[in-house]
Length: 260
Image (cartoon, rainbow, N blue to C red; front, side):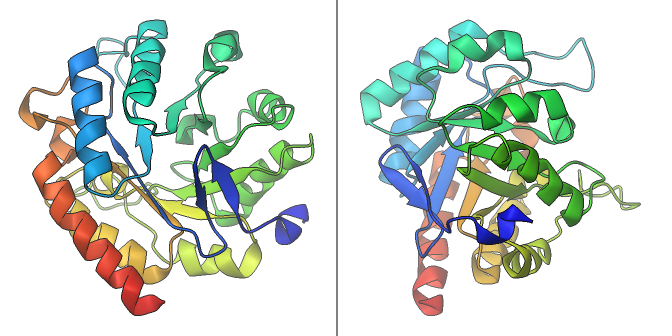
């Protein structure tokens, strides 16, 4: 596989992941307003995050749930980028929306689209970092083959993301497969990110799983942070407050120091 020979470092704006570089990626599940996204961006940046995440287009299980602000959400993310200097990552659902992503620093391909091969091929024709999330019921080999679809078209700036898989356990939203981090490290040189927010679905479980991901050697951790989780339009139950995130960030960086 060509993923075995990929560069260990991927640059995202003014930061990098892999090859000894570590990034905290943080922000709300969904962009809701200008004040919200800029306020959260400033808070997570002050706490140590170097990449801002935020959903503009939201794939929801129910068609009646909030679907995101779409193009307006992208515009607000770019305002937050302008206000803070942080590079941004957001999810692309359909090729028709790709022109809106011209100034987005990293495009996320979500779990539901991990095997959307036409979409992956198009990502391969871009010269832009791609955050590729593992599907809900996909093996590590299938994740790597999806990365190959991107790489085979000429784009080697791929970051893999473990975000939990579907198992028989109903207490958590998914089951976080932390063994994926060292296992992928044996199989590929691509950077590896862990998303404990979507994996657990519970804010109370996110800190311990984030610290465990850091201890497992992840190159980045992506965490949902909302200024008022109880009133969030999407996934408030798994979102940390800025204060909780700041405390967690300090612990993660202490773990990184021990591993160095």
